[in-house]
Length: 426
Image (cartoon, rainbow, N blue to C red; front, top):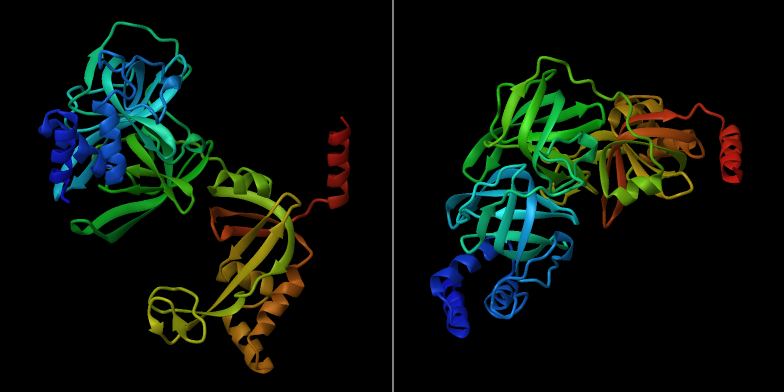
């Protein structure tokens, strides 16, 4: 059944205008809401769910809005407003996204291209007949052509900063309309296969006094270059390998700063449990004992096409290939709170192995066994304590820390234990 057929059926059942139902249904489906869920949401909206007895949406404080509501009226301050371009039915649509807040809490919103108001940070607005949908497990306001917006002269005592100014360490996937002042630490130009063919983008690493995060500039701005300090306005944040990533778009404003943004030299030091529970961090420092070197370490072979590790000359993506030798270490790090697999590249592996790739090849040939390379690595690092800095990703297969540094701890474990005991007794 086509979307139009679904809309006609709904309009007939509910006794409402088909065109309005079609627009609402298109909006929901366009935002990845399953058809059955979208139809049920509209049945609640045009029926009596979440409304007063006269059919008018009930006024609610933001903390009271739930995914069980279909449409509500809220009065709130606009915290952030960012634009994003999406493609639907082969056409480009520009939507606005951000957050609203009142005295009781905050909530995210999406304003579709049929919404009549241009929400600006700092405005206090009353939004009548705002739709409610579930997004990432939380309620979100859906603003469309059936929403009645009004800017009101009312001051709300909110606990949130207006305008979206944030430090990198405070960003989370899903943030929208964000402003950051950063130094560009790494920047490279790439050509990717975009939705309209080959597209040139910029990617790299940003830093400020709070930390570092990766970024992508989808519409390369001249001001973004390695070493530059810039103000990035109207950005949004996505998840990249388990960590937040700053996204700069055609709607973002990039301004060169007349000062140098200072960047934190050290990564935050966390326990392994704290790091794993975060769900992913771009730059973190962990310390613990290496308790095991995992299979797939030492002298390995990679696919020349995609770089994946191959087994018995077979790549998962490219089948039978002539593998290229490489060095890698997968060390299990344990600090007593949890474990993580620290993945060392060829340079770090050569350092702990005590030789380069040619040395490893010769070692394996002399022994007629590649495993001797991993065994030597294991003999050198298992049982020792290391401080590891890198990028942490967490998925259903476990936690992996792609290491940028791997250094043997130089403090005295006994002294540290005494300090911890004193703190526990205090």
